[in-house]
Length: 94
Image 1 (cartoon, rainbow, N blue to C red):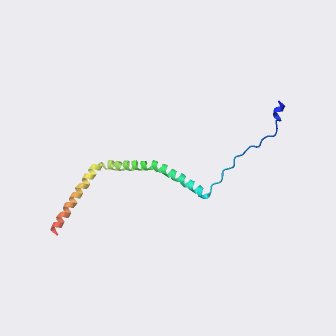
Image 2: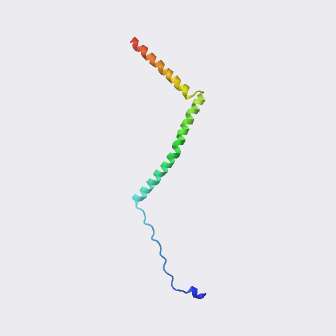
């Protein structure tokens, strides 16, 4: 058993070379890539939330006032028709 302990000198261990430090330009390029990727993910989450929030807000406002988009549209068309009639009748007088 003692023979196993004294087999000979140990062979040197090959250490991998440390990775080269990135240049400032390469570090900046990688930061930009990460930032753009993060912004893209954030946009994919926030844009649908904002759209849904606007949709919900519009319909909540209509509900609060006790109306609907169709009724508001009809009223706007009535106002437009009245304005057109008024402008046509004034042009005939002038």
